[in-house]
Image 1: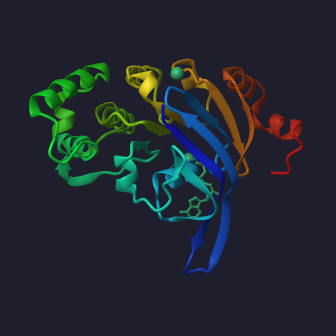
Image 2: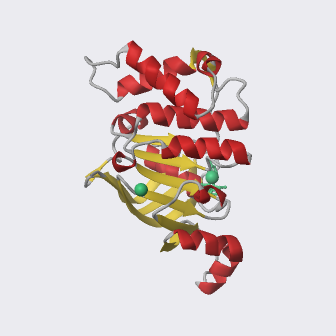
Image 3: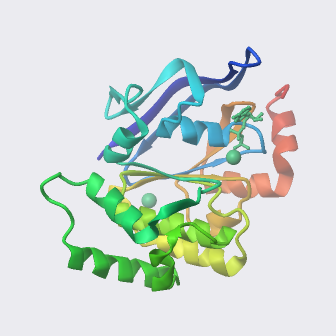
Amino acid sequence: MTTLEVKDLHVSFIDEEEETSKEILKGVNLTIRTGETHAIMGPNGTGKSTLSETIMGNSNYTITQGDILIDGESILDKTVDERARAGLFLAMQYPAEIKGITNAEFIQAAVNARRNEDNPVPVGEFIDELDHSLKILNMSQEMVDRYLNEGFSGGEKKRNEILQMMMIKPKFSILDEIDSGLDIDALQVVSRGVNSMDNKELGTLMITHYQRILNYIKPDFVHVMMGGRIVKTGDSSLAAELENNGYASLRDELGLDI
Ligand code: ADP
Ligand code: MG
Ligand code: MG
């Protein structure tokens, strides 16, 4: 078992040109173990993407306090690449398009980066696994031969993020609004991909605005994030409660001024 721990995390966005600083995360605590699925729900602008980008090592955000640890060891001095090699994966809310590298090449490089340098994945094995994953995700071979995300629709980009995750087999997977913009069929396909992963070896953090995807990917824990903090933690019934009563009602219940 591996543990990912976010401890009293404070993150600011600092605009050097404007000389302004805005605190976005105000003391987030979260512990995820491999084998667990966590969901973070929260209104827009509350810092969910900031949390995922900061865990992954995006240097646009400045950590002013707290720590992020894997098995008790801080990863704050690790680059994005080093964190990926250590087993972190982020499916981004807005995946980038990259010309000049095909999807298949990108995935193969990412898979090999997780392995020993002198032990790259055998090509036959890679192709078999790719075929298998493409089938689960209802994706065509043609999509992996295209440049990374180029010309992909929103839904195809999301599927492609899940394809990368299935192939890379991270220890911790952060899915940032993987459900946004998906119709019900695409949502089911994406969920099938996530659920096909070996659950014991993987810790999942699902970030979502809506409860809908949690009907397909069952969380063990649901956290509500508001105003840059986790204000409530519960089981999956908390998601249903939120869907019925809305965030405003929780804000009132907790007496929050945000
Ligand atoms: P969420 O994902 O919950 O919708 P975000 O983490 O994207 O929230 O944003 C949290 C807050 O941080 C918002 O007020 C947003 O405007 C601000 N923010 C995030 N990224 C930047 C940025 N690059 N520049 C300025 N403000 C930012
Ligand atoms: Mg589980
Ligand atoms: Mg976001």
